Image 1 (cartoon, rainbow, N blue to C red):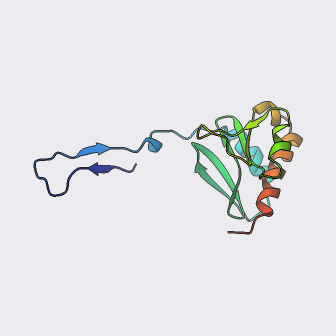
Image 2: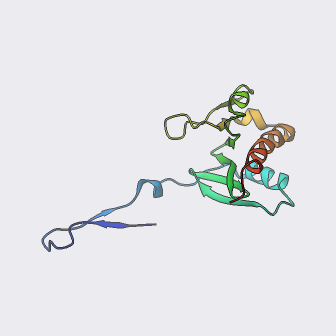
Image 3: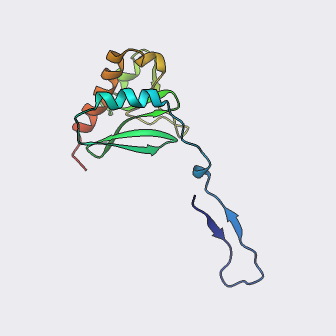
Length: 136
């Protein structure tokens, strides 16, 4: 946990306050079973890294965020070119994590990736987008 002391440096009468950033209050929650399914699909790739972010788990491909899990939903970075087509897929919706739409990223409800084939298709979209970008 990161802790910041807020106060005036030269004022000895001032009592600093303890402030804990909001982002550190959020526990990481994601569906571990879904994470394992994705890991199995990515077996053999050496360019995939898992990172905890957005309150969930993200998979980075070639250094680019490609897909992830927030609670029980799949988050996929499909890119701007495939965005509208991806939104038209069943159980997909715009990613509005910050309160406004993030173009090029979609959420997929659990019904949209129940089958391994459906999950593989979404993982493939995220991977294809990452592979179209220069490696980091």
